[in-house]
Image (cartoon, rainbow, N blue to C red; front, top):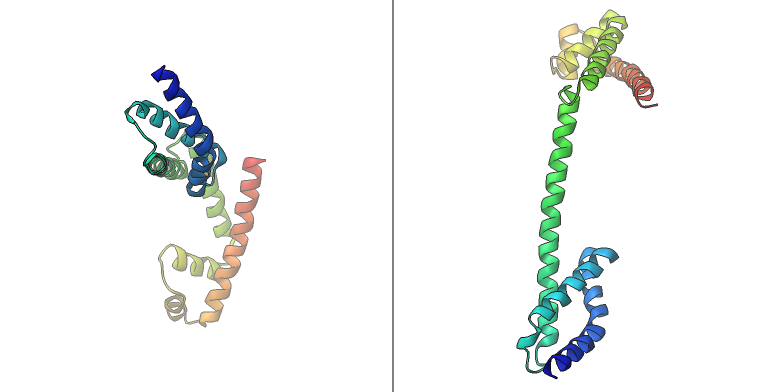
Length: 179
């Protein structure tokens, strides 16, 4: 008889509080599915500790405390998973960039480097020299202008033209690679 009373009490609490608890969790997560799952976890935890309750005092506060703790644990776990996933993506991106991921990527990277090198060699000598000083030797526009005895604006314009041509080449390579 006592077991039946406990089940009836729990069902009443569940029907009364499930939706508000789910909404409470949803306010933190903004995910209907996750809120539903965590609300169910709250009531599972409540059921495992339900036998110790003699009266209704403090049950609502206890339910929301459980909900808060389960939600915070979920957020922490999700953050750890997201951080790990982001770390793996960055690691794979770096490996892919340097050709360590697989031989095919290595071949693509080498081809891209070769095409960029060939494109740079086809630039007028002054433009190529300005671009190399800027990008390979990390010189500022003023330093390049002083070294070549030309206006800073000319340096800026030549770098602009170089980058414009390289972007066009890289876009074409990207298009050919993925389509």
